[in-house]
Image 1 (cartoon, rainbow, N blue to C red):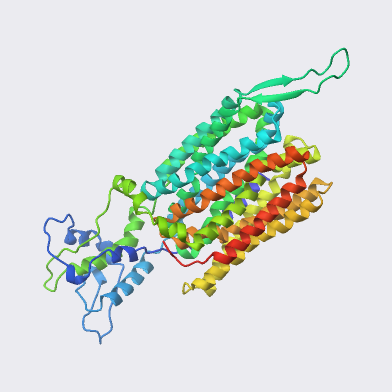
Image 2: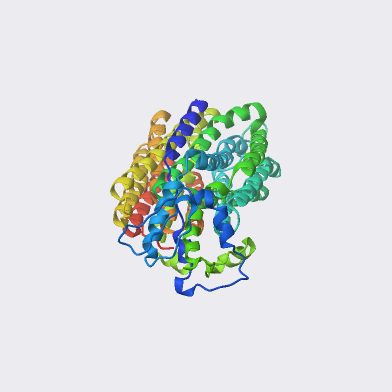
Length: 577
Protein backbone atom coordinates (compact mmCIF):
# COMPACT_ATOMS: atom_id res chain seq x y z
CA UNK A 1 0.00 0.00 0.00
CA UNK A 2 2.77 2.45 0.88
CA UNK A 3 4.55 2.37 -2.54
CA UNK A 4 1.19 2.98 -4.18
CA UNK A 5 0.39 5.96 -1.95
CA UNK A 6 3.80 7.54 -2.40
CA UNK A 7 3.66 7.01 -6.19
CA UNK A 8 0.24 8.65 -6.39
CA UNK A 9 1.42 11.57 -4.28
CA UNK A 10 4.50 12.08 -6.45
CA UNK A 11 2.39 11.99 -9.65
CA UNK A 12 0.11 14.63 -8.14
CA UNK A 13 3.21 16.66 -7.32
CA UNK A 14 4.39 16.46 -10.96
CA UNK A 15 0.98 17.55 -12.24
CA UNK A 16 0.86 20.37 -9.75
CA UNK A 17 4.04 22.01 -10.99
CA UNK A 18 4.00 21.10 -14.66
CA UNK A 19 2.59 24.45 -15.78
CA UNK A 20 4.18 26.91 -13.37
CA UNK A 21 5.11 30.05 -15.28
CA UNK A 22 8.22 32.10 -14.88
CA UNK A 23 7.88 34.97 -12.44
CA UNK A 24 9.75 38.15 -13.19
CA UNK A 25 10.42 39.79 -9.85
CA UNK A 26 11.80 42.97 -11.31
CA UNK A 27 9.33 45.56 -10.10
CA UNK A 28 10.98 46.08 -6.75
CA UNK A 29 14.38 46.12 -8.42
CA UNK A 30 13.37 48.80 -10.92
CA UNK A 31 11.78 50.89 -8.18
CA UNK A 32 15.15 51.04 -6.45
CA UNK A 33 16.65 52.91 -9.42
CA UNK A 34 16.66 56.67 -9.38
CA UNK A 35 14.88 58.56 -12.13
CA UNK A 36 16.73 59.68 -15.25
CA UNK A 37 17.32 63.14 -13.81
CA UNK A 38 19.50 61.63 -11.08
CA UNK A 39 21.87 59.84 -13.46
CA UNK A 40 25.42 60.92 -12.81
CA UNK A 41 28.89 59.96 -13.88
CA UNK A 42 30.91 57.93 -11.38
CA UNK A 43 34.07 56.27 -12.64
CA UNK A 44 34.66 54.48 -9.34
CA UNK A 45 31.43 52.42 -9.43
CA UNK A 46 32.15 48.69 -9.78
CA UNK A 47 29.72 48.22 -12.57
CA UNK A 48 30.91 47.93 -16.18
CA UNK A 49 27.89 48.51 -18.37
CA UNK A 50 29.53 47.61 -21.66
CA UNK A 51 30.96 44.39 -20.29
CA UNK A 52 27.57 43.58 -18.77
CA UNK A 53 25.84 44.11 -22.12
CA UNK A 54 28.32 41.86 -23.88
CA UNK A 55 27.90 39.18 -21.22
CA UNK A 56 24.16 39.31 -21.63
CA UNK A 57 24.16 39.25 -25.43
CA UNK A 58 22.79 35.66 -25.65
CA UNK A 59 19.80 36.74 -23.61
CA UNK A 60 19.37 40.05 -25.39
CA UNK A 61 19.17 38.21 -28.69
CA UNK A 62 16.05 36.45 -27.42
CA UNK A 63 14.18 39.73 -27.25
CA UNK A 64 12.71 41.97 -29.90
CA UNK A 65 10.79 45.08 -29.07
CA UNK A 66 9.67 47.86 -31.36
CA UNK A 67 7.52 50.84 -30.74
CA UNK A 68 4.95 51.92 -33.34
CA UNK A 69 5.94 54.38 -36.08
CA UNK A 70 4.08 57.30 -34.48
CA UNK A 71 6.33 57.21 -31.44
CA UNK A 72 9.28 59.55 -31.46
CA UNK A 73 12.04 57.12 -30.60
CA UNK A 74 12.42 53.54 -31.72
CA UNK A 75 13.70 50.89 -29.40
CA UNK A 76 15.14 47.58 -30.55
CA UNK A 77 16.73 44.63 -28.90
CA UNK A 78 16.97 42.52 -32.02
CA UNK A 79 20.37 40.90 -32.60
CA UNK A 80 21.82 42.50 -29.48
CA UNK A 81 21.53 46.14 -30.52
CA UNK A 82 21.71 48.79 -27.82
CA UNK A 83 18.67 50.69 -26.61
CA UNK A 84 18.58 54.46 -26.91
CA UNK A 85 16.87 56.57 -24.35
CA UNK A 86 13.19 57.28 -24.72
CA UNK A 87 10.70 59.75 -23.37
CA UNK A 88 8.12 57.07 -22.59
CA UNK A 89 10.24 54.85 -20.37
CA UNK A 90 7.43 53.32 -18.37
CA UNK A 91 5.72 51.94 -21.49
CA UNK A 92 8.98 50.55 -22.81
CA UNK A 93 9.82 48.96 -19.45
CA UNK A 94 6.46 47.26 -19.34
CA UNK A 95 6.75 45.92 -22.88
CA UNK A 96 10.34 44.88 -22.35
CA UNK A 97 9.54 42.95 -19.20
CA UNK A 98 6.64 41.24 -20.94
CA UNK A 99 8.97 40.08 -23.71
CA UNK A 100 11.47 39.02 -21.06
CA UNK A 101 8.81 36.97 -19.32
CA UNK A 102 7.97 35.15 -22.54
CA UNK A 103 11.62 34.47 -23.28
CA UNK A 104 12.47 33.32 -19.78
CA UNK A 105 9.69 30.79 -19.22
CA UNK A 106 10.82 28.01 -16.90
CA UNK A 107 10.09 24.34 -17.36
CA UNK A 108 9.44 21.58 -14.86
CA UNK A 109 13.09 20.55 -15.02
CA UNK A 110 13.97 23.96 -13.57
CA UNK A 111 11.70 24.17 -10.54
CA UNK A 112 10.57 20.56 -10.09
CA UNK A 113 13.61 19.40 -8.09
CA UNK A 114 13.34 22.07 -5.40
CA UNK A 115 9.63 21.38 -4.87
CA UNK A 116 10.40 17.66 -4.63
CA UNK A 117 13.13 18.32 -2.07
CA UNK A 118 10.76 20.46 0.01
CA UNK A 119 8.16 17.68 -0.20
CA UNK A 120 10.62 15.09 1.11
CA UNK A 121 11.78 17.37 3.92
CA UNK A 122 8.15 17.76 4.96
CA UNK A 123 7.76 13.97 4.87
CA UNK A 124 10.86 13.47 7.00
CA UNK A 125 9.80 16.00 9.62
CA UNK A 126 6.37 14.39 9.98
CA UNK A 127 7.91 10.92 10.14
CA UNK A 128 10.20 11.86 13.01
CA UNK A 129 7.54 13.82 14.88
CA UNK A 130 4.67 11.31 14.64
CA UNK A 131 6.92 8.39 15.56
CA UNK A 132 6.43 9.36 19.21
CA UNK A 133 2.64 9.04 18.84
CA UNK A 134 3.16 5.36 18.02
CA UNK A 135 6.08 4.71 20.37
CA UNK A 136 4.32 6.37 23.30
CA UNK A 137 2.13 3.27 23.77
CA UNK A 138 4.94 0.77 24.57
CA UNK A 139 7.03 3.53 26.19
CA UNK A 140 4.22 4.45 28.59
CA UNK A 141 3.58 0.80 29.37
CA UNK A 142 7.23 0.26 30.23
CA UNK A 143 7.54 3.35 32.41
CA UNK A 144 3.92 3.38 33.71
CA UNK A 145 3.16 6.87 32.45
CA UNK A 146 -0.20 8.53 33.12
CA UNK A 147 -2.18 10.30 30.40
CA UNK A 148 -1.09 13.61 31.90
CA UNK A 149 2.60 12.68 31.52
CA UNK A 150 1.94 11.42 28.00
CA UNK A 151 0.34 14.76 27.25
CA UNK A 152 3.42 16.55 28.58
CA UNK A 153 5.72 14.48 26.37
CA UNK A 154 3.60 15.16 23.32
CA UNK A 155 3.04 18.86 23.99
CA UNK A 156 6.62 19.75 24.88
CA UNK A 157 7.61 19.19 21.25
CA UNK A 158 5.29 22.05 20.36
CA UNK A 159 6.72 24.21 23.14
CA UNK A 160 10.14 23.93 21.54
CA UNK A 161 8.58 24.56 18.16
CA UNK A 162 6.95 27.72 19.46
CA UNK A 163 10.15 29.01 21.02
CA UNK A 164 11.99 28.49 17.75
CA UNK A 165 9.47 29.70 15.20
CA UNK A 166 10.11 33.48 15.42
CA UNK A 167 13.92 33.15 15.38
CA UNK A 168 13.52 30.74 12.46
CA UNK A 169 11.43 33.26 10.55
CA UNK A 170 13.99 36.00 11.13
CA UNK A 171 16.84 33.68 10.26
CA UNK A 172 15.46 32.66 6.88
CA UNK A 173 14.86 36.33 6.06
CA UNK A 174 18.59 37.00 6.35
CA UNK A 175 20.47 33.74 5.86
CA UNK A 176 20.45 31.07 3.17
CA UNK A 177 17.24 28.99 3.59
CA UNK A 178 19.17 25.99 2.30
CA UNK A 179 21.69 26.32 5.14
CA UNK A 180 19.00 26.93 7.76
CA UNK A 181 17.12 23.82 6.68
CA UNK A 182 20.28 21.69 6.75
CA UNK A 183 21.07 22.80 10.31
CA UNK A 184 17.49 22.11 11.39
CA UNK A 185 17.44 18.60 9.91
CA UNK A 186 20.78 17.77 11.53
CA UNK A 187 19.66 18.99 14.96
CA UNK A 188 16.30 17.21 14.98
CA UNK A 189 17.93 14.00 13.71
CA UNK A 190 20.34 14.11 16.64
CA UNK A 191 17.42 14.76 18.99
CA UNK A 192 15.52 11.81 17.51
CA UNK A 193 18.56 9.59 18.02
CA UNK A 194 18.85 10.83 21.61
CA UNK A 195 15.20 10.25 22.55
CA UNK A 196 15.62 6.67 23.88
CA UNK A 197 18.79 7.72 25.71
CA UNK A 198 16.81 10.40 27.54
CA UNK A 199 13.92 8.02 28.21
CA UNK A 200 16.28 5.56 29.90
CA UNK A 201 16.91 8.19 32.57
CA UNK A 202 13.32 7.93 33.84
CA UNK A 203 13.09 6.38 37.30
CA UNK A 204 10.07 4.30 38.33
CA UNK A 205 8.96 4.06 41.93
CA UNK A 206 6.37 1.63 43.26
CA UNK A 207 4.02 2.90 45.92
CA UNK A 208 2.12 0.20 47.86
CA UNK A 209 2.29 -3.58 48.14
CA UNK A 210 0.15 -5.84 46.04
CA UNK A 211 -0.20 -8.77 48.42
CA UNK A 212 0.26 -9.37 52.13
CA UNK A 213 -0.54 -12.87 53.43
CA UNK A 214 -2.37 -13.57 50.14
CA UNK A 215 -4.71 -10.63 50.64
CA UNK A 216 -4.78 -7.46 48.56
CA UNK A 217 -4.04 -4.67 50.99
CA UNK A 218 -2.88 -1.70 48.94
CA UNK A 219 -3.27 -0.85 45.29
CA UNK A 220 -0.02 -0.55 43.40
CA UNK A 221 0.79 2.95 42.18
CA UNK A 222 3.75 3.46 39.87
CA UNK A 223 5.34 6.89 39.85
CA UNK A 224 7.64 7.93 37.00
CA UNK A 225 10.22 10.53 37.98
CA UNK A 226 13.04 12.35 36.21
CA UNK A 227 11.17 12.78 32.93
CA UNK A 228 12.96 16.13 32.43
CA UNK A 229 15.68 14.77 30.08
CA UNK A 230 13.03 13.28 27.78
CA UNK A 231 11.00 16.48 27.85
CA UNK A 232 14.12 18.50 27.07
CA UNK A 233 15.17 16.39 24.10
CA UNK A 234 11.66 16.52 22.65
CA UNK A 235 11.59 20.31 23.01
CA UNK A 236 14.95 20.55 21.23
CA UNK A 237 13.54 18.44 18.43
CA UNK A 238 10.53 20.76 18.18
CA UNK A 239 12.76 23.84 18.04
CA UNK A 240 14.80 22.26 15.25
CA UNK A 241 11.70 21.38 13.22
CA UNK A 242 10.44 24.96 13.54
CA UNK A 243 12.68 25.93 10.62
CA UNK A 244 10.82 23.72 8.14
CA UNK A 245 7.79 25.80 7.19
CA UNK A 246 9.37 29.30 7.32
CA UNK A 247 12.22 27.98 5.17
CA UNK A 248 9.86 26.33 2.71
CA UNK A 249 7.76 29.53 2.56
CA UNK A 250 10.87 31.52 1.67
CA UNK A 251 12.10 29.02 -0.92
CA UNK A 252 8.72 28.69 -2.63
CA UNK A 253 8.36 32.46 -2.60
CA UNK A 254 11.60 32.64 -4.60
CA UNK A 255 10.59 29.93 -7.06
CA UNK A 256 6.82 29.75 -7.48
CA UNK A 257 4.60 32.42 -9.14
CA UNK A 258 1.56 33.85 -7.38
CA UNK A 259 -0.88 31.93 -9.57
CA UNK A 260 0.41 28.62 -8.20
CA UNK A 261 0.87 29.44 -4.52
CA UNK A 262 -2.05 27.36 -3.26
CA UNK A 263 -1.08 24.24 -5.17
CA UNK A 264 2.60 24.48 -4.28
CA UNK A 265 1.74 24.78 -0.59
CA UNK A 266 -0.73 21.90 -0.88
CA UNK A 267 1.95 19.80 -2.57
CA UNK A 268 4.40 20.37 0.26
CA UNK A 269 1.69 19.78 2.87
CA UNK A 270 0.92 16.43 1.25
CA UNK A 271 4.47 15.52 2.24
CA UNK A 272 3.51 16.03 5.89
CA UNK A 273 0.50 13.79 5.44
CA UNK A 274 2.45 11.05 3.64
CA UNK A 275 5.12 11.30 6.34
CA UNK A 276 2.43 10.75 8.93
CA UNK A 277 1.19 7.72 6.96
CA UNK A 278 4.74 6.36 6.86
CA UNK A 279 5.08 6.86 10.62
CA UNK A 280 1.86 4.96 11.30
CA UNK A 281 2.63 2.08 8.91
CA UNK A 282 6.39 1.69 9.20
CA UNK A 283 6.85 2.36 12.91
CA UNK A 284 5.04 -0.77 14.17
CA UNK A 285 7.06 -2.90 11.75
CA UNK A 286 10.34 -1.34 12.86
CA UNK A 287 9.39 -1.76 16.53
CA UNK A 288 8.60 -5.44 15.95
CA UNK A 289 12.17 -5.95 14.82
CA UNK A 290 14.14 -3.43 16.86
CA UNK A 291 11.89 -2.26 19.69
CA UNK A 292 10.72 1.27 20.30
CA UNK A 293 14.27 2.40 21.06
CA UNK A 294 15.50 1.08 17.73
CA UNK A 295 12.75 3.07 16.02
CA UNK A 296 14.28 6.37 17.12
CA UNK A 297 17.83 5.26 16.31
CA UNK A 298 16.84 4.30 12.75
CA UNK A 299 14.78 7.42 12.08
CA UNK A 300 17.58 9.60 13.42
CA UNK A 301 20.08 8.03 11.02
CA UNK A 302 17.68 8.40 8.09
CA UNK A 303 17.42 12.13 8.79
CA UNK A 304 21.19 12.52 8.92
CA UNK A 305 21.59 10.66 5.61
CA UNK A 306 18.94 12.89 4.02
CA UNK A 307 21.29 15.85 4.44
CA UNK A 308 23.41 14.55 1.57
CA UNK A 309 20.90 15.04 -1.28
CA UNK A 310 19.60 18.24 0.30
CA UNK A 311 23.05 19.81 0.43
CA UNK A 312 23.95 18.65 -3.08
CA UNK A 313 20.79 19.65 -4.93
CA UNK A 314 18.80 22.22 -2.93
CA UNK A 315 19.00 25.87 -4.01
CA UNK A 316 17.65 29.03 -2.42
CA UNK A 317 16.49 30.34 -5.79
CA UNK A 318 16.84 29.49 -9.48
CA UNK A 319 20.40 28.73 -10.54
CA UNK A 320 22.55 31.21 -12.42
CA UNK A 321 21.44 30.36 -15.94
CA UNK A 322 17.72 30.57 -15.18
CA UNK A 323 18.08 33.53 -12.88
CA UNK A 324 20.05 35.48 -15.44
CA UNK A 325 17.41 34.78 -18.07
CA UNK A 326 14.75 36.10 -15.71
CA UNK A 327 16.55 39.08 -14.21
CA UNK A 328 18.98 40.31 -16.84
CA UNK A 329 16.03 41.75 -18.76
CA UNK A 330 15.30 44.02 -15.81
CA UNK A 331 18.98 44.93 -15.60
CA UNK A 332 18.88 45.81 -19.29
CA UNK A 333 16.09 48.30 -18.70
CA UNK A 334 18.32 49.94 -16.12
CA UNK A 335 21.31 49.88 -18.41
CA UNK A 336 19.48 51.58 -21.25
CA UNK A 337 19.07 54.50 -18.83
CA UNK A 338 22.83 54.45 -18.43
CA UNK A 339 23.57 55.20 -22.07
CA UNK A 340 23.29 58.78 -23.22
CA UNK A 341 22.38 59.97 -26.67
CA UNK A 342 26.03 59.84 -27.84
CA UNK A 343 26.44 56.26 -26.67
CA UNK A 344 28.64 57.23 -23.75
CA UNK A 345 28.34 55.19 -20.60
CA UNK A 346 26.80 56.82 -17.59
CA UNK A 347 26.25 55.57 -14.11
CA UNK A 348 22.89 55.27 -12.36
CA UNK A 349 22.25 55.47 -8.69
CA UNK A 350 21.66 51.81 -7.89
CA UNK A 351 20.66 50.23 -4.60
CA UNK A 352 23.57 48.59 -2.87
CA UNK A 353 23.55 44.92 -2.06
CA UNK A 354 24.03 44.14 1.57
CA UNK A 355 26.18 41.26 2.64
CA UNK A 356 24.55 38.31 4.36
CA UNK A 357 26.07 39.43 7.66
CA UNK A 358 24.71 42.94 7.28
CA UNK A 359 21.30 41.55 6.40
CA UNK A 360 21.41 39.31 9.44
CA UNK A 361 22.15 42.24 11.75
CA UNK A 362 19.61 44.59 10.16
CA UNK A 363 16.67 42.27 9.47
CA UNK A 364 15.25 42.55 12.98
CA UNK A 365 15.00 46.33 12.98
CA UNK A 366 13.93 46.45 9.32
CA UNK A 367 11.02 44.05 9.82
CA UNK A 368 7.61 45.79 9.60
CA UNK A 369 6.70 44.80 13.15
CA UNK A 370 3.99 47.38 13.75
CA UNK A 371 2.22 46.67 10.48
CA UNK A 372 2.45 42.92 11.04
CA UNK A 373 1.10 43.03 14.58
CA UNK A 374 -1.71 45.52 13.98
CA UNK A 375 -3.07 43.99 10.76
CA UNK A 376 -6.55 42.47 11.13
CA UNK A 377 -5.64 39.91 8.48
CA UNK A 378 -2.61 38.83 10.51
CA UNK A 379 -4.86 38.22 13.50
CA UNK A 380 -7.36 36.36 11.32
CA UNK A 381 -4.64 34.02 10.09
CA UNK A 382 -3.26 33.63 13.61
CA UNK A 383 -6.60 32.62 15.12
CA UNK A 384 -7.44 30.23 12.28
CA UNK A 385 -3.96 28.73 12.57
CA UNK A 386 -4.40 28.30 16.32
CA UNK A 387 -7.76 26.57 15.90
CA UNK A 388 -6.29 24.27 13.29
CA UNK A 389 -3.32 23.44 15.52
CA UNK A 390 -5.54 22.53 18.45
CA UNK A 391 -7.14 19.79 16.36
CA UNK A 392 -4.02 18.87 14.42
CA UNK A 393 -1.78 18.41 17.45
CA UNK A 394 -4.42 16.39 19.28
CA UNK A 395 -4.87 14.20 16.22
CA UNK A 396 -1.15 13.56 15.81
CA UNK A 397 -0.53 13.01 19.51
CA UNK A 398 -3.60 11.10 20.68
CA UNK A 399 -5.24 9.17 17.81
CA UNK A 400 -3.31 5.89 18.29
CA UNK A 401 -3.88 6.19 22.05
CA UNK A 402 -7.60 6.74 21.44
CA UNK A 403 -7.87 3.42 19.59
CA UNK A 404 -5.73 1.63 22.18
CA UNK A 405 -7.65 2.94 25.20
CA UNK A 406 -11.16 3.06 23.77
CA UNK A 407 -11.10 -0.26 21.90
CA UNK A 408 -8.25 -2.16 23.55
CA UNK A 409 -6.23 -2.46 20.32
CA UNK A 410 -2.50 -3.17 20.16
CA UNK A 411 0.13 -0.81 18.76
CA UNK A 412 0.01 -2.08 15.19
CA UNK A 413 -3.78 -2.06 14.99
CA UNK A 414 -4.03 1.40 16.51
CA UNK A 415 -1.40 2.80 14.14
CA UNK A 416 -3.01 1.28 11.03
CA UNK A 417 -6.40 2.76 11.91
CA UNK A 418 -4.65 6.15 12.02
CA UNK A 419 -3.43 5.84 8.42
CA UNK A 420 -6.63 6.53 6.48
CA UNK A 421 -7.17 10.05 7.91
CA UNK A 422 -3.65 11.03 6.84
CA UNK A 423 -4.20 9.68 3.33
CA UNK A 424 -7.43 11.68 3.13
CA UNK A 425 -5.56 14.77 4.32
CA UNK A 426 -2.89 14.43 1.63
CA UNK A 427 -5.41 14.00 -1.19
CA UNK A 428 -7.76 16.72 0.09
CA UNK A 429 -4.96 19.24 0.47
CA UNK A 430 -3.83 18.78 -3.12
CA UNK A 431 -7.42 18.89 -4.35
CA UNK A 432 -8.10 22.09 -2.41
CA UNK A 433 -4.94 23.76 -3.68
CA UNK A 434 -5.60 22.83 -7.31
CA UNK A 435 -9.26 23.88 -7.10
CA UNK A 436 -8.48 27.23 -5.48
CA UNK A 437 -5.77 28.05 -8.04
CA UNK A 438 -8.07 27.07 -10.90
CA UNK A 439 -10.88 29.28 -9.59
CA UNK A 440 -8.56 32.23 -9.02
CA UNK A 441 -6.98 31.79 -12.45
CA UNK A 442 -10.39 32.05 -14.09
CA UNK A 443 -12.16 34.68 -12.03
CA UNK A 444 -9.34 36.73 -10.51
CA UNK A 445 -6.77 37.05 -13.30
CA UNK A 446 -6.70 40.79 -12.76
CA UNK A 447 -5.70 40.26 -9.15
CA UNK A 448 -9.09 41.23 -7.75
CA UNK A 449 -8.61 41.30 -3.99
CA UNK A 450 -12.28 40.78 -3.12
CA UNK A 451 -12.53 37.62 -5.22
CA UNK A 452 -9.29 36.21 -3.82
CA UNK A 453 -10.44 37.01 -0.29
CA UNK A 454 -13.76 35.24 -0.85
CA UNK A 455 -12.01 32.12 -2.13
CA UNK A 456 -9.71 32.02 0.91
CA UNK A 457 -12.65 32.42 3.29
CA UNK A 458 -14.64 29.64 1.63
CA UNK A 459 -11.82 27.13 1.78
CA UNK A 460 -10.85 28.05 5.34
CA UNK A 461 -14.47 27.69 6.43
CA UNK A 462 -14.54 24.19 4.97
CA UNK A 463 -11.26 23.47 6.78
CA UNK A 464 -12.69 24.36 10.21
CA UNK A 465 -16.46 23.88 10.09
CA UNK A 466 -16.18 20.53 8.32
CA UNK A 467 -14.02 18.95 11.05
CA UNK A 468 -16.27 20.52 13.70
CA UNK A 469 -19.30 18.67 12.33
CA UNK A 470 -17.40 15.36 12.23
CA UNK A 471 -16.05 15.76 15.76
CA UNK A 472 -19.40 16.78 17.23
CA UNK A 473 -20.92 13.67 15.68
CA UNK A 474 -18.17 11.53 17.19
CA UNK A 475 -18.47 13.24 20.60
CA UNK A 476 -22.24 12.74 20.78
CA UNK A 477 -21.89 8.97 20.59
CA UNK A 478 -18.55 7.16 20.51
CA UNK A 479 -19.19 4.18 18.19
CA UNK A 480 -18.69 0.66 19.45
CA UNK A 481 -17.07 -0.22 16.13
CA UNK A 482 -13.64 1.43 15.66
CA UNK A 483 -14.17 1.52 11.89
CA UNK A 484 -17.02 4.04 12.31
CA UNK A 485 -14.87 6.22 14.51
CA UNK A 486 -12.14 5.99 11.89
CA UNK A 487 -14.50 7.28 9.18
CA UNK A 488 -15.44 10.33 11.24
CA UNK A 489 -11.80 11.10 12.05
CA UNK A 490 -10.95 10.64 8.37
CA UNK A 491 -13.58 13.21 7.44
CA UNK A 492 -12.23 15.62 10.04
CA UNK A 493 -8.61 15.36 8.87
CA UNK A 494 -9.53 15.37 5.19
CA UNK A 495 -11.56 18.55 5.48
CA UNK A 496 -8.98 20.14 7.75
CA UNK A 497 -6.45 19.88 4.90
CA UNK A 498 -8.47 22.48 2.95
CA UNK A 499 -6.57 25.11 4.93
CA UNK A 500 -3.86 24.72 2.26
CA UNK A 501 -6.05 27.07 0.21
CA UNK A 502 -6.99 29.14 3.24
CA UNK A 503 -4.67 30.60 5.87
CA UNK A 504 -1.67 28.56 4.67
CA UNK A 505 -1.57 30.55 1.42
CA UNK A 506 -1.89 33.88 3.21
CA UNK A 507 1.81 34.59 4.00
CA UNK A 508 2.73 34.64 0.32
CA UNK A 509 -0.30 36.80 -0.52
CA UNK A 510 0.06 39.27 2.30
CA UNK A 511 3.86 39.65 2.29
CA UNK A 512 6.64 39.96 -0.25
CA UNK A 513 9.47 37.51 -0.77
CA UNK A 514 11.50 38.72 2.19
CA UNK A 515 8.81 38.73 4.87
CA UNK A 516 6.63 35.75 3.93
CA UNK A 517 8.64 33.45 6.20
CA UNK A 518 8.51 35.93 9.07
CA UNK A 519 4.76 36.44 8.67
CA UNK A 520 4.27 32.69 8.78
CA UNK A 521 6.35 32.52 11.94
CA UNK A 522 4.41 35.32 13.65
CA UNK A 523 1.05 33.74 12.87
CA UNK A 524 2.38 30.31 13.84
CA UNK A 525 3.74 31.08 17.32
CA UNK A 526 0.38 31.64 19.07
CA UNK A 527 -1.00 28.63 17.21
CA UNK A 528 1.82 26.43 18.42
CA UNK A 529 1.31 27.55 22.00
CA UNK A 530 -2.43 27.02 21.71
CA UNK A 531 -2.01 23.58 20.13
CA UNK A 532 0.46 22.58 22.84
CA UNK A 533 -2.01 23.60 25.51
CA UNK A 534 -4.65 21.54 23.73
CA UNK A 535 -2.52 18.40 23.86
CA UNK A 536 -1.81 18.89 27.56
CA UNK A 537 -5.45 19.65 28.40
CA UNK A 538 -6.51 16.48 26.60
CA UNK A 539 -4.32 14.44 28.94
CA UNK A 540 -5.81 16.26 31.93
CA UNK A 541 -9.37 15.62 30.72
CA UNK A 542 -8.68 11.92 30.17
CA UNK A 543 -7.18 11.46 33.64
CA UNK A 544 -9.96 13.46 35.30
CA UNK A 545 -12.84 11.72 33.49
CA UNK A 546 -11.57 8.17 33.39
CA UNK A 547 -10.64 8.36 29.70
CA UNK A 548 -13.87 9.91 28.44
CA UNK A 549 -13.10 10.91 24.86
CA UNK A 550 -16.45 12.61 24.17
CA UNK A 551 -15.41 15.73 26.06
CA UNK A 552 -12.12 15.87 24.17
CA UNK A 553 -13.72 15.83 20.72
CA UNK A 554 -16.52 18.22 21.68
CA UNK A 555 -13.95 20.79 22.87
CA UNK A 556 -11.99 20.39 19.64
CA UNK A 557 -15.15 21.14 17.64
CA UNK A 558 -15.90 24.33 19.61
CA UNK A 559 -12.36 25.60 18.99
CA UNK A 560 -12.74 25.00 15.24
CA UNK A 561 -15.99 26.98 15.11
CA UNK A 562 -14.46 29.98 16.90
CA UNK A 563 -11.46 29.95 14.56
CA UNK A 564 -13.69 29.92 11.49
CA UNK A 565 -15.77 32.87 12.66
CA UNK A 566 -12.64 34.95 13.33
CA UNK A 567 -11.11 34.23 9.92
CA UNK A 568 -14.30 35.06 8.01
CA UNK A 569 -14.75 38.29 9.95
CA UNK A 570 -11.23 39.73 9.62
CA UNK A 571 -9.26 38.28 6.68
CA UNK A 572 -8.52 40.00 3.38
CA UNK A 573 -6.01 39.10 0.66
CA UNK A 574 -4.64 42.59 0.01
CA UNK A 575 -0.85 42.66 0.09
CA UNK A 576 0.37 44.66 3.09
CA UNK A 577 4.00 43.84 3.84
